[in-house]
Length: 243
Figure 1 (cartoon, rainbow, N blue to C red):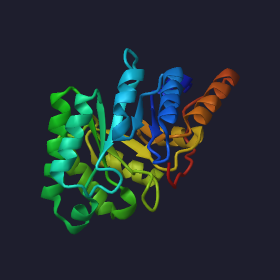
Figure 2 (cartoon, helix red, strand yellow):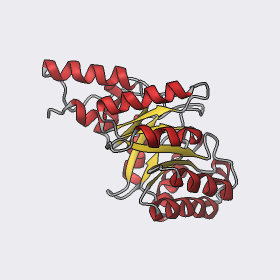
Figure 3 (cartoon, rainbow, N blue to C red):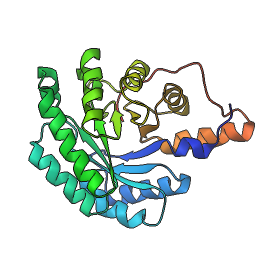
């Protein structure tokens, strides 16, 4: 089945999360995302005003991270961080769960935190993606986290920050897709650096991919489209690593 480069672009959350990026880098990232009409630009919280300015009037969403990258901020701080981002024009929030609480089995803590952030997002017409940081969780914990994220009102479950010990895998994407209802979407992130891995993630049910290699991915998509070889895949490419 053939697809278009725009289908690929609308899967991409262009990541501008590296700590060394300057304002000029963030603006260039927005220009790149606008060029291809990506799904969003996912930037650091301090950059939300820049995104809101540059992406205004476009279909590219303003996205930021909450409790990033370790998830260990107190809940009140995560809520305050989310509320400020929303007030500044953010329409998508990618939150990191409290990983230690999840590993320890304190699912009520994790669920309550997700619920508070989902409520804050939905009150402003925004959506919430929940980052599990799968490299630290057992499969049983991944399933449980997906299920409680859904119960708490999340819109997405997401594999990784890109700053853990490993990025996302095809097996994790399959497991997460099978662990939530069809209306809950799945995002892969961490180690997705080329078109083939995006297509592999798409093949197992991922709706979004967090990437910083957007230019290379889109150049390859346009090349294959021109050749008539851009299509859905059945042979999957494994992935791993960081942003």
